[in-house]
Each structure stands twice: as C-alpha cells, then as structure tokens.
Length: 316
Image (tube, rainbow, N blue to C red; front, side, top):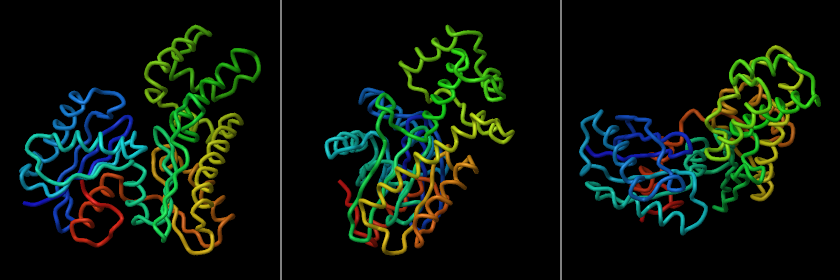
C-alpha cells in the first residue's frame, strides 16, 4: 500500500504518522526526540530510523511503498539547516522517496489553517508563523530562553514559577497557595534546592519540568501570582501573533489564527484570553484551536505536493 510519512520533530517528542494516498490515517507513533542540535548525525539517523520503523510496522507497511516524507522540525532556520536535515532523511536506508524538511511551525500552520493565516505555537517553546495570500511568510519568536525567548511557552512557565519561588525565599513576595503547590512538586527546602534545579536547567533547559498545570491549578483557586503569570503569558503570545499579522499586512481581509501546543491548548484560561484579545483587535479574524496536529499537517503537505494541489513547497 502506498503512503506518505509526516513528522513533527520537537524538543521533547517525535511524532510520526503514516497516511494513505486517499488521506486515511494508517499508523502513528510517538518516539524519542531526534533533533540535530542535540545528537550527532549518526545518532539522529538511528533514532529516526527506529521511530519510523515502529510506526510503519503497526500497519505492516513497506519502506519501498513510501511516496514521500515531510518533516516539520525545530532547528530549521535557514536553507543550510534545511539541507542538513534533509540529508539525514535522504540517508535513511530503505526509503527511496522525495523528502521535504521545514520548520515545525510551517507544518503546524498547514494543519491549523491549510497554509494561509497565522499559527501560534506555545508548547515546550513558542513561535508565531504566518503566510499571507501573496505567499509572503513571517515568523516571530522561537529564540532561545537565554535571551528571554520562547515567551509564553511551557519552558517560560517553568522559569516564571521558579522565579516566583526565589522571590518568596528572598522575602520579596508573600507565600501563597502557588508556592505550596509548587513545593509539593519540587520539594524546595531552601535556596540550595532551587539552585540545583537551575544547574540542571543550564544543562538540559527547563523542558524537563512540568509546572504549567500547577500554575493553572493555583489560578483556578484564585491565587494572585498564578493569575498574574497566566495574564503575562497571554500578553506575550498575543504580541508574537500580532507581529506576524502586522508584518504580513493581513488586517484588511479575513484571516485565520490557529493555536497549537500544550501551554495554550491545555490551558483554557490562556486560550480564552488569547482569543478575546485578538478578536478585540481584529474584526475579520477567526481564532481556533487546531484540530489536527503538525504531523498530520506534514502528511497533508506531502499529499498536496504529490497531487499538485498547491505550489508552496517542492521536494528535494
């Protein structure tokens, strides 16, 4: 059976889907991350190959029948990046199909809007990406946390939670429910425990922490600091999105904004404020949560190229 593979390769996961030429989803697998910024080329090939083989084995698919591979991945910010990642996929043994590698935000945009509009991703990291009807593209955000990037993301939430705890330990802020809930998760008995977590962040980044749900729980209970963090989070993701809209001059015609990523999709408070702010600013915008993931978007790109439905992308 002929099929295509679509991949969403992020900082903490690798999601691959196999979809038949008629659009039927055949298999899905979430495996270990395989970003080139974290692994050598040899290790990346091994991880990717293992992830793909587990996926296609679920539907007893043959590598030879794969018609295209499209991968949306973090770390593609230039043509040089794209060529390097595509070289990895072209080297996978057994696959003899065309390949396209793009930034994961582009695959998410395709899933959320069909390729025209804006997508705001707030997951482990954050980025806004858009394409207008003239084919022009613009991205905003996606910078590393060391220069205060990834605003409004899961990593950002983790760091804001730790900042709040440090301020309590300093006596700058009062201890509230938020501190107690965070302490249940982290067991911080004093400054040294907090510093140890920071030292681990310097090696791994803050993605290993999962403090967003703790902040949301405190916010539901009315904790003032938790609510302030979520309000700031929303202001930042709205700012990212507005920058893309403004630079693509999309304000004068109807357009769609899709939200994607756990820091906004799994946080009803964040998404509600995000939607309200954009609808207040733009009278012709439709704001929604993407009902398909970026791996599906990557599959749809592959099918559309093969069927010559759109000329946005070409295979290598």
